[in-house]
Length: 223
Image (cartoon, rainbow, N blue to C red):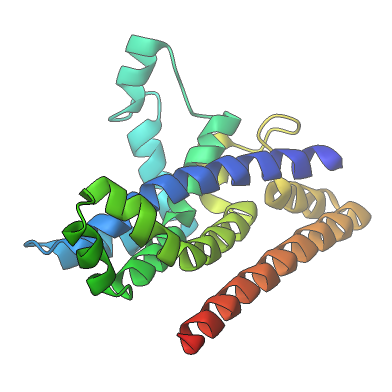
């Protein structure tokens, strides 16, 4: 019963890292630059948060399936397929959890005092240095909070993961899929145990996220 938990932690961890890197980069760009269609792009990036997981799963199958838009070239050129693999579960979880990192990071960057960034530029810092030495450290608490929520969301991902990675015990069966299989098989003890593990882990992540947010709020109040 420990295999689904280990796989879930691996998938959720890698998915969170992918969502963190892409979410922070795009959030900073959209928070700092205005252009035509920015609101539409923001809506598209947030879409995985509101679409049914099975709909996202279908999009991923169309995109990454063996005959998909990206899936076919990946298979023909590199011999790489994401369907029915744990790597596919990482992609699905990363896309579904991405909006949580993106929205948190964009809010954090938007709330920064731009005078601090402008002062750094006046002192001769380039844009990259301003980002890493001023913007990112100040926005870090909000970003960490979003990353924690993304991790919890990735751990609980079901629909999109099921459609792209399948439900293969020991290979692609994550914790949520293992609970589903246990219920289907009538194994109440296993289902109860896995549910308890998932619930406790999620609660710990949410409490940690709340503490990070609270710490950030207290610092801002003091300032």
